[in-house]
Image (tube, rainbow, N blue to C red; front, top):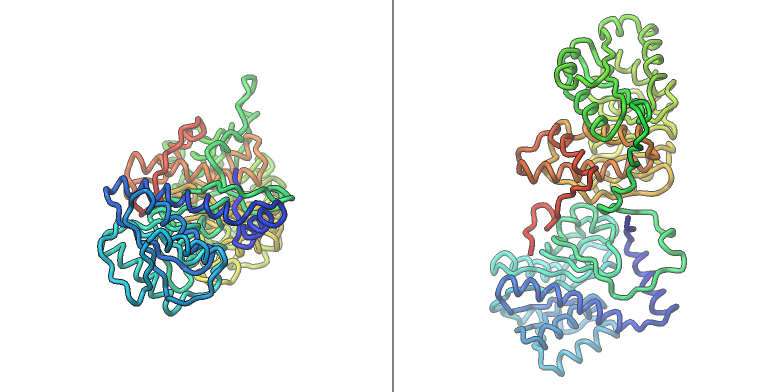
Length: 523
C-alpha cells in the first residue's frame, strides 16, 4: 500500500527536507533532473533519435528541465532549451541552472524567435505541482507548441513531475495541458496523477526517489492511499480445518421478473471470492435461470406480484432472510417498483450485518430521500456517477471534477463507506481513509461489471475481511480481474461474467502486467 499526496503535502515534504533536515535544494534538483534524463535517454534509445527540446518555465520545475537537458547534452544529445519569454520571475535555482547551461554552450531560445527543426523528444518542464489557476497567454501557446511537436513531428513527451496544466490535487485540466508519453514524478505519486483526466495525461508514470526525508509524522499523516499487488496478501487464508459455514453466508437480494443477470453475476463473484454459502433472493421467474447458471447457489424465490399486494407479509419474509445472512448485497436489478422499495426499506431498517448497496437500491434512496435516514456504518454504497448525482443532488460534471471530495463528504455525512465508481474509482471509507483505485481497464465498461463488484466486496467480507478493507481492496481486485479478462479477450470483447471467472487467478496471485495507461503508447 502506498500513500498519495496533494501538491501542498508534497511541498511540505520538500520544505521539511530542505529546511528542517538540511539537504540542499540543488542536491534534490540534480537527482530529479537525473531521473528525468534517464527516462528521456531510454525513450530516445528506443526511438533511435537524439534531438531534444526542453521547454521550461521560470520556476524550479523549469530548473529541473534545464538540468536534465544539460545532462543529455553532456551525453552527446542535440539539445535546445526553449523558454516562454526572455524575461520572467526566476527562482534562484533556475537562474543558476540556466547560467550553467549557457556556459556549456547549450542553445537557449524563446518561443517568439524559435524555429523548430528535428525533434525526437520534448522535455515538459513548464509548470510543476504548484499550478492552481488556468493556463493562459504565452504559456498556453507554449503548451500548444508542445502538442504540435507531438502531433506533427511525432516527438515523444517526457514530463517532469506532472504534465504542465494538470492539477496535482484533482487531475483536472487547468485551461489546457500537455499530454505526456512518460511522466517522472518526484518522491510520491500525486492525487492528480491517479484521477482522470490527469491520469491519462501522464502516460507511463515513473515515481522517482530523489532523497526526500520522511515527514516527522510519517505515513500516518496522510489520508489518501492506493494499492499494489502485494496488498492482495491481505486476503484471509483458507484454514485447512473448516467447512462451508466457516466462510460466511451471503444473501444476494437482486433481480426482477425475468431479469436474472444481475443476481447471477453478484452471486458468482461472491462464490469466486471465497464465500461458503450464497443465497439468491429473486422473483420466482428467475428460478430456472439461476439454477442452470449457478446450481451451487441456494434459492429464495418470491412472488413479486404478491409482494406488491401484501407488503407487510413480504417484509416479514425479508426479515427472516436477512437473519440468515452474514453480509447482504442489496439492489442490483431489483427495479424501482413499490415492492422493491419495501425490500430496500426493510433490509436497511432491520438488517444488522454489512450491506453492499448498489444500483436500484441507490436509485430508490434518491427517489425516496427518507430511506437515507437508515444509512448507518454497516452500509457500503457503490454508486456510479449518475447514481451519485441523483443521490446527492450534484451534477455529474460537478462530481467528475471532484470525485474525491464528493465521496469523502458523503461518507462523512452518513458515517458509511462510499465506493464512487468511475474509471478511477474512489473509495471513501468510514474509518477516514480514502483509496483511489489504480487497477482496471476500459474493457470493464460493460453492463454487469458493477454487479460483479458487489459480489466481490460481499465475498471478501464473508471470508472474514474487515468491511472497510473489503470495499477498497475489493475494487482493486475487481480491476485486476478485469485486466486479466481484457488480456485474454481484448478490450472490446470482455463480458462481466469473464471478469468474475478471472477472480480466482487474482486471488491465487496471478496479476496482469501494466505497460502504460489505457489509451497511451508505452515508450
